Length: 495
Image 1 (cartoon, helix red, strand yellow):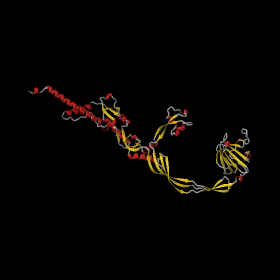
Image 2 (tube, rainbow, N blue to C red):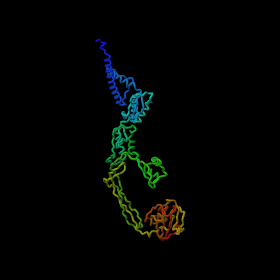
Image 3 (cartoon, rainbow, N blue to C red):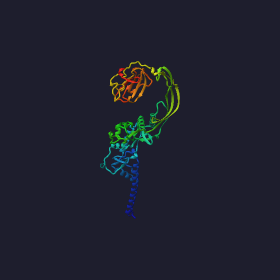
Image 4 (cartoon, rainbow, N blue to C red):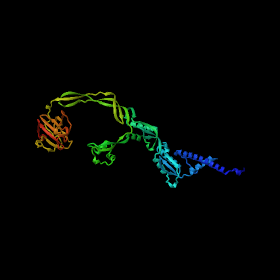
């Protein structure tokens, strides 16, 4: 058989198809694996892929297959779709643009966070091939892509968070910084100079490393203030009888404007009993329990020893020797929650100074033996009679004179005397009675305040009360009476 005869066309055809089948088989396998490899690469590690990249062609069918696959992957794509957190963000023409933008963001954020490492949630950022052409879509600029990535908060600072009941509330650049925030919160509630036994949180509080937004990294003093101040929690208030908008707002730590804002459609002029209003109250993030020993100095009351003397009238008391308070040091264990005392326990006390009794003289002389000067002076500086002695007062005669004066005008004793009455007395209101001896008495009615007590000896011109409108009175004035042996006299005959 010659060469021509041995070269069977059918055999060649069969061999060709077999070879082609093998090539396509390996081409599909390699293409699939290569595509999977690309999708698994982290976005921040994207290498700058050249659109004209070539893979060296080795001898044999596998080399041809790989070369063919790469050409298909790199030459057929004009546009890449960017997906952020499962949402389509837009399109770019180069994959390396995503990596470049990420590096810029990381650099900017790291500088703002004083060099803290910035990490990227690359799983939430996907850049994949499409069959689209540039003219079919709007291509994102670097700034637009940067804004979308920042808005999605994919870039976080690798910091230390203060976690309260499972929630990261604030963060610090270092673990030491986060712990110092917690110490600052505790110190906020400690009493200066006290002996602290323990300081703890009632909530579950811990410091943990976490990826946080750069804005959540705070200065220690700001973080302490935030935790102590807390959040505003909503509550409902039912309007009570006598409530006003102002009273409700102030009682709940709000301004009237804030109260109105919290209640859409609310008309302050139509406040009704039983109406429900939306309020908010501030609730700290934590409850700090402090147990401390507090030392206080307390006074010890002195006793009073009385000595009788006929030099003073009955009911009159004068201090002979002033008493001196004693002192004692008391150590108390105090438990506080956010600065409010919830429990106390006295540990011990030491007397540092003993009290000294006061010596007081108590009068025994009969009031009947007291005699004034015998002449009376005006009890107020301004004499303006609004109602004279003897005037008809609805079927009865006026027993004194009414001297009009402003509220609070000092009322003075008309003569030396002894206080025989100093209290409220029906239509007279606040009333002071003085005995001047020889059956002469003076009465001072409708007083605003009384400054003397029964048994007290007063001197002529001494302030004993102030002008008021107590009892049955229609304006500020002093109702002044002079009585002799119990019978009302015209005061103007004595002044």
